[in-house]
Image 1 (cartoon, rainbow, N blue to C red):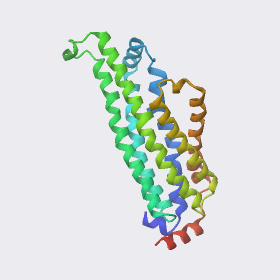
Image 2: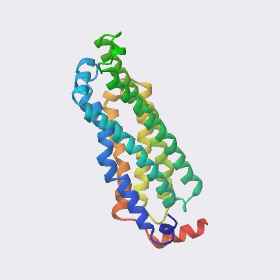
Image 3: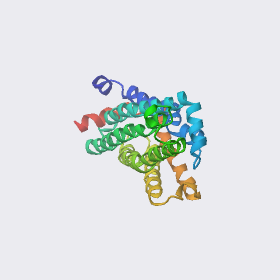
Image 4: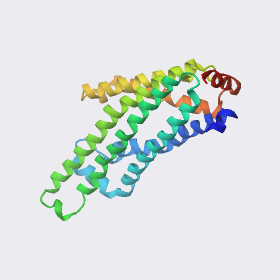
Length: 243
């Protein structure tokens, strides 16, 4: 990392861009989107149980990719700290703290999904429960998983984008445009998390669809880093002043 700081920060920017952009676009949807949209049928415990047991390998793969995403985020935020701390070290540290809080929450939340195949298995110790009860509990644990993602982890996913967006706006070695979009996305995550906590009907509303559009603004920043990089001389100047 020290070598990147003193030689070519564009290498650092493009590593971040790749990890945060294309890689997350491949792994993220499988770990977070596939299970609730394809395997789980809201309110139908029997069909949901059937879908999961028929696709146990895919279900477990979704859990694995969700864990890989969080480990990758650990590297992303530390690399971003290296890239953005010349602007303001305190805000860069705050960005890291918000993401480091969200990672264990999200990883431990996968326990809720890991329990589901156990509940739906033919283990002898579960025979005291009826199949209908076990299927209902499987749906309950999935609901807990979704609540943690949408109403707890999402708060920190929004919070880490706010100092990041401010740092990008203030940095003269990156365009302000992705910084503004990061603030938009961060606000969207926070609005979405608060609304989903306060209202059970929010997800089905038009307002929820509008807020979800804001979240896509986040993706501009990593692709900007991947394609455009940073102004090397301005970054080095900022790094010298920071020290």
